[in-house]
Image (tube, rainbow, N blue to C red; front, side, top):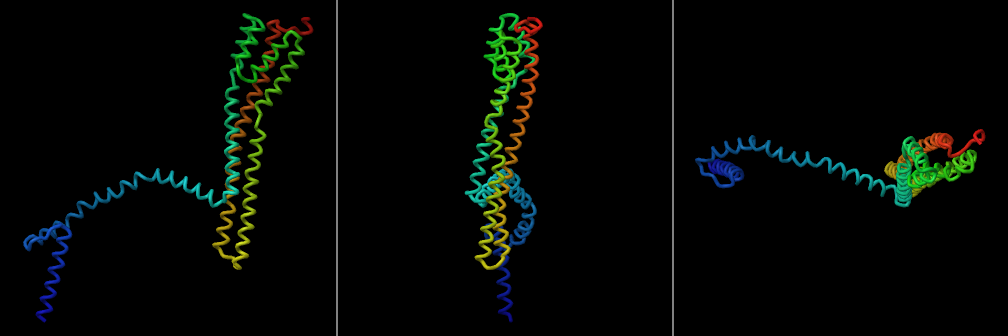
Length: 284
């Protein structure tokens, strides 16, 4: 009995000694054991918030980078899951369509001018330098309105009817220039969903082939196959929506330019008659 009590006392003293060494880093004496245990019990209460702040600091600094990286990874994973043979044509449609749209937007923005101020400059040129000065001004100005004015001034000596016909005819030519390459953009808008649906149908066929090969309708096989098949439809719709937005913006720009052309053409012919550059039948 005494031997067991002695062994228990020795084990207890060793356990306290080992705990004190782990907390302090050095072996304490018998007189310091009580003080060390009190300090070790109080120390975590002071240092714990600092440790929590240090652990929380990187978590607060990383969400933006994690979100950006996560979004790119999700897009890449979905592209791969959809199948390169179907997602690659959709990506090509998007790239070419955006290139066409951006080129048209740049062209239309460069072709947009202030028609009222341009008419005022044409009038001052006609009064100061005649028809040749006005033609030179039209030649140095970009845009369909300047091109229409140039054609009208070129035939100003042939009468008012010839000038009107030339303005109308060249207006159609300028509209054709503004709408150049838009049929390709319309093609990509219609083609992207079709490619997506085609990929979905073929993916569904492959999913049913897997079910037939497995001999059982497994939820994993069905859900996985349908999910991958529908990714092509989602991709095609996204491409079509993006290109459709650009197409509508371009058409609105063209419509605004056409209205400016029509209004400017009427004012231009009136200006030619008022300045005496061309004569009507009554004046003749």
